[in-house]
Length: 361
Image (cartoon, rainbow, N blue to C red):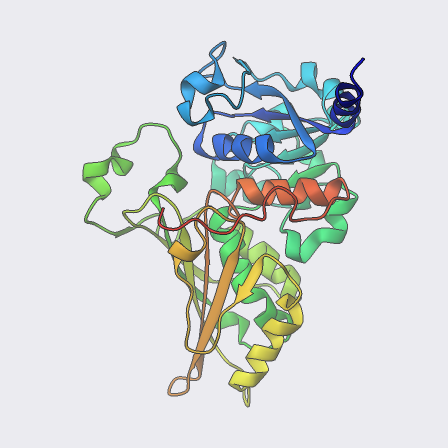
């Protein structure tokens, strides 16, 4: 037998076997694209309720000659013992009905939906207006914001992959709260997202003619990412935080920018804030701190796992304006899920997701 063939077989046997449920949504296909190119992963199952028994490359022609798998209806029970990790890229309400302790004893789960992000069952059911089917797992799930929780991620079998607005907002504000530089009662977040954040399903509000040449605020004072942001920032600060969060839809395919406002505490200078960001993010590969007077733009992070953060201090009002930008389908969803997987399986975090942002896109 050819020695090269034997070596290829051994390498394949040692690769992580992955399944993607909800593989035909925007996030699911982005995740599939990343996993196909990951040097230590073999995708062995693609799930889709809408396109079951169809070839994946027929659904997404950009995968032609790169994947031969057929989509099948999601069934975690059947595949749990056959794979090392299951990615669930489904809307809220699905994952909690599919996962239990028996499944977690067989495989690792990374849920890209909202079912395990909130620690309190009642808060989840209030904001998402649906019953949580597995509340006993809420306390064991780890919130998968990699730069903040990597030690907990490393030893967990159930990861709640953060939301896109939340990843951008939390990472932008975290150093300010960790170093007690701002009044936590004054936080306001003004965030804007591309249309892909609404998913691939047909919706009048995201049709081209409805979104092009327009910008609108939506879910004002009621967006479901609000309690997620408050929960995680409260953990960071050690105090209960309530904030104002207003999302906006803008006519572009992908990208998020969060402009965060807060009042600085007395005698806090620009250098104090700069030192705080450098202390917490100076060694983080995927967080890029902007130079003074330079601010993030969504075009410089699209197609990547990078988060760009910059800030300015309004001396007149003594308020800080901190700005973060990321790709909502990547660091806001799919590539962060891969980053979580890399940590869980003790690989370099950047494996398979260290692409330079694409431009123009």
